[in-house]
Amino acid sequence: MIGKIVLPVILIAAFSAIVCAHHSPKLSDFCKGDGSPFVKIDNPNAVNVPLDTIVDCLQSGLNEFDFASIPNNCSHYAEAAHNYLESNGIKTAIVVAPIGGGSYHAFIGLSTTDHDRVYINLTDGILAIGEQVNGRYIFTKHYGNTIQKQDVGEERNFLIFW
Image 1 (cartoon, rainbow, N blue to C red):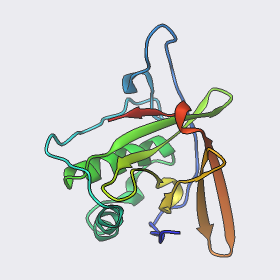
Image 2: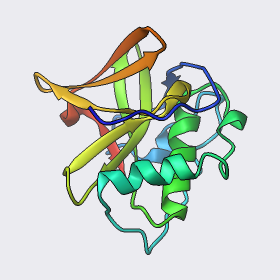
Image 3: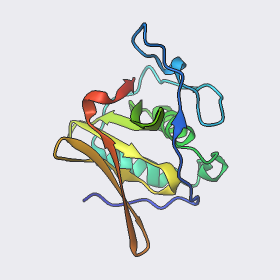
Image 4: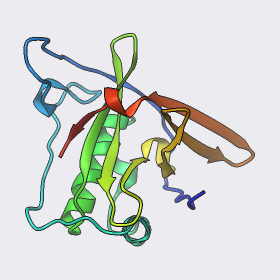
């Protein structure tokens, strides 16, 4: 298992989406938990890097990036993490996964140079790297002595926005 990063916020949430069935979904079809649109800032010079570089960037950037100002919603965390990593030259996608009942979970995806595709969830202030178990991706988070697992489903159902 890859190490964890503890961020100064505790929260958990899913968000709803407006998805039109007559076309392939775009990120603009989804609103964040507060109803605002995603603001995805891509860096045309961003590249794929090793997973350790991604984790190091997130760890070293904690003082620069104000995670505590992020509203209590996974979509805000995904947007903030995407924009932060892209601003540091790391190619990152926002990923939206249906979790049932018309709700979705948002996190980030990266194509690394050493682990192929990796999914990272920062919601509720703890970095969790998705592990594939029986074809499904599971995020495991540690809250002191408590462990929480979140099943975000099969990769084929993910909407990945590069």
